[in-house]
Length: 503
Image 1 (spheres, rainbow, N blue to C red):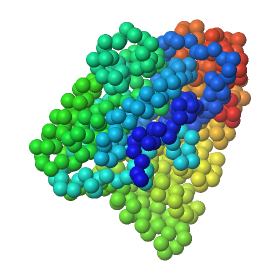
Image 2 (cartoon, rainbow, N blue to C red):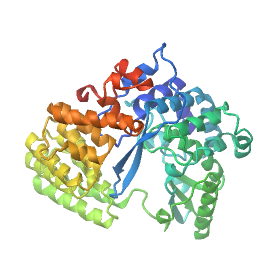
Image 3 (cartoon, rainbow, N blue to C red):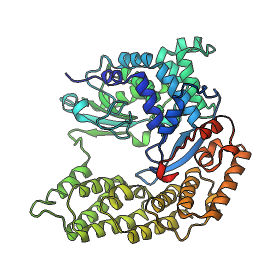
Image 4 (cartoon, helix red, strand yellow):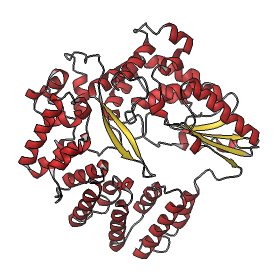
């Protein structure tokens, strides 16, 4: 029997929710892979530990480049604010499970295609772009039978537009919620309260990045699904809707209904990304099919892929990018295809150097270099060192701090040197993750002069009451004697948020 949306939710216990949201849901997957939250989780579960202070906290802002070369704002809450929200969600998990049951029980298929669940051989409860057709089914063939149009729409700045008071509206209804606004002990108001605390008390918008936000958004979007599912056949990928209808008039009516439902919860359509297509159209994106077809002969007549084949394949990818609104995720898909094949040495070198060259045009590629190239092909240190120096020198002056931070991460991981590194430029950038990766780099290089300057900078941030906005750097940089309150308690307990090799 096919599992329902609620079945997946009910498989998660309250304790599992708490543990996994804390350990794997504090830092976005878009950040350099330098973090380990296990020590903090252990600290949170100490029996003698007092509960963190219930107050408003600022948060770290970080820009991550999207596949269309437009940055997306990532938020990193303080560990204290994150823990309080995780605890609140865990304490009320039984009620939230009932909410997800009630909002999805009458669905003919699983509408929400990306959701919180236990994943095979993975500890996190959520993964961006996670799809599993085996478990979720493939409803498209059933719902587009007899239909003539497909409507694609998404929510305009979904997470940034969520009004925290809307969470209680979705959970118990607007009327009940408004009647009990002042009852701060109601469970739904507590979720609202601790959500606000992760963002300095702001009611407008939730942070992009923490896995708690995926649960909070699903609370609202599942409620919208409950209403829309009565009349329309569609699937939803986070905030992207794909609906199949019989006529152009129905297509227009779906958009009217969708916009009305969104407006009830303070959300609105992104009209720039709203399109209506006459069927038949392919479900799988055309460029995906094209790349798969192009790679069909890899390894068919010989057990390896030669240099000219890789060259032609990458040339084809570049053409596809220009024909698909500069969608650079095409290169990520191409890398995954190539990684599954046996490339000759010359092919590997060509691939690596070409992707480095492209990373200087598309900063979106920079975070991929380690996982899909350097590590897989045992790339020489000279090639990596040259690459990261080019990336650092190109993007730091442009204030593309994500790319520069990744260059510093690679330098630390592979024990390499960035010749243009200047600690004063780092400090002037005033970017938390860039400062943190610089701290790691300077420790690896045993650069005592730069470390002294970083410590002075961290003390200044603390004294200027900017610790929370830079907490990941300040906390790791300063000694226990320079910290106070909960920060000091964590430091005394030897809690670090970094992997051991980066401490």
